[in-house]
Length: 525
Image 1 (spheres, rainbow, N blue to C red):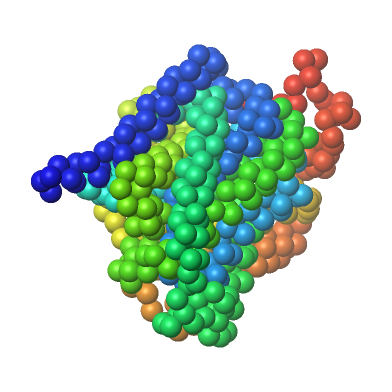
Image 2: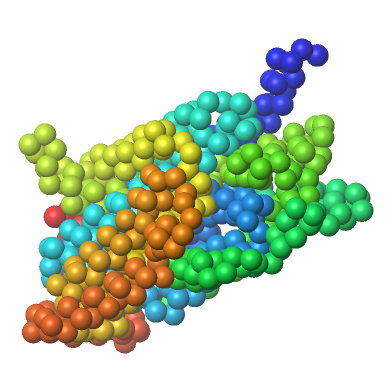
């Protein structure tokens, strides 16, 4: 058999997998399009998504390239210390459940900037939040496009630009055609596809490992690979604590996560959704460590060559030669591509929702775009900008770039939401000052990490993992500035806080139709 024919046969499962995922995504999105009739359908699915479906959709969009590819790669390279990534990404929903989910849904807002304007009665706070939503969304989208390119390169030998182009086309088609209503069904399907795509190959690989005599992880070169913080001293301890802060508190500030809770019918449904999400994420995150440990046994050369992000994609063929290995590779390729599509869709919805209200709805060639037209124009911008950036910066670490997005979110929206929901003394000036301190601090760290070669020493460590100091700095700034401007607390805050914390069953402001949407904001400003 000629090398060309052999390469074509090896690539066939990957090609089929990507084609099937793309067709299924477009088909489900088209089916959901039949239910999208109003502007509210496009933004928040008319607030009618039930907990089970919404939880599956959240799992679909939350389990990104970092979860599907990056965690196993980090475990392969750095060891058990990297388990804090999946632990933190899951535990963040506990904080979200306890402190944010229900009050945020009761606010009746459509986006984070909507909530900020309703809470502080300030266009300045809204503008700052809009800027941060776009920045965090684009930073989170970068590794999705990077992962798509890596997946197709590993699976079928395609150039790195092919993956991002396919993701952009599919996401734009789905998001602009059906909005949130359509994407909800797509993302729910993609969660279960991703779980299956990791679970089935992992089970087969464990059987192979057992048949090989259950070899242990080699310890000759890296005797402390399985020991957290082994030999890393104070800097390693700081990195771990900073990572915990970023992942535990960053979840509530991710725009594509927060917007999902606006789609629930009420605050009680938002809490139930969060509980189901915790179970779904816990089931998924059991699997990446399996690939990381097996990779240390069967594919250590991937870490040595700097290709650890490809571990999940290449391990099945390395352990199971022949047609079975090819089929397993096709399955994980399908799951990986579903991860990029689902997360990119959620981020596109969140960023487009903000851009459509604060940018494209205000001016486009001298005229205003409104409603669905503005949303569609904004969705195109939301994916094209980060896709272009990803093509220009191909050497991104998938999980570490996502970690930076968490750090920025934890340093900005976490203090804004927690203090805005639970402390009536937070003023608009305090909010803007805290957002500036946290955003600039974490943003500087993100820029340093993306643009500067890795260096040793405490200075680079503090910049590469800024959350441990940028999050407290943002909280402290908001409190101190608000104390100095306590006379500027908006007059409506007391009533607004009652709305946030009053269960729907006791809410006297509900309309005759029982709708929990009590926002005074108009969607088509």
